[in-house]
Image (tube, rainbow, N blue to C red):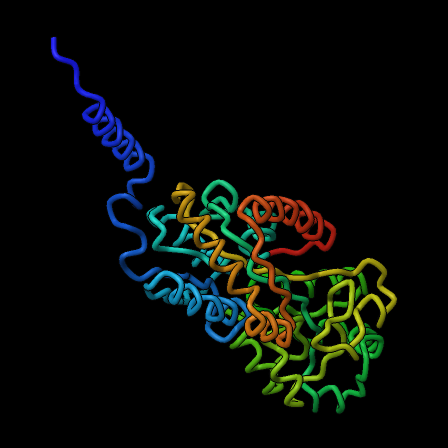
Length: 335
């Protein structure tokens, strides 16, 4: 019986190890991910904060990986349409989701049936940014109605129940739930009008069709700075560095404990190779740490993150529990 020599044995062992690696991560071994464009699904219309943040990180990922990361807006059902598309996509690293507190923290409690499971159907990659919301009115309308602050708004709304309209980016979004929390804590009755994203809702806010909105700060900020919208308060526990002179709702109306902030992060379909997930997280964290991008996000009211997949998964679990309680207390329903 002839035994292989030491060099032959090493060659065989190396071949077996390579085969084992290919079996573990077939997508990486066979295709050299990424060898084609990667799609980032944004579950809301173009122009809103989800879209703004996706378009901020996409070029950085394109440069880092040498392939195009393309933003694909798929709006509908409070983000559920886009999230479901990603949940049912191949777990090969070529379809990602810019998820939100709505798609992965609120909707599970708000909708009786979701077409996807926000925990089981996704592999968290990283949170991109946290964002406060801001309570806004059209500037001219606020002036005409004599509303200068949150207390004025509450008094006006209570004297005319059901006469004021509240715009949102869709059922189940943080914008919707911030408004529902405000209604439940102030005893006001505002008629909810859900849109397919912040951008179309803001158009009607600026045009005067809608009366109030609790929008994500980055998408509302240009209209506030341009004088078209009046910022009454931010919905976070602390004031925003982007609007330091604007009080929190807790400050402005004495609503102790009022805190409704948003977050946005990248997720992949469950089963996506961990190597792909980790590489994307590392590149996003690297880009968010650069002075130019960090400064740009902070100036827009967003607080950059870049946490690990494990940290992001833990945050999603905590947010689901938090918002399930808010939905229950506020009595919010999909209408």
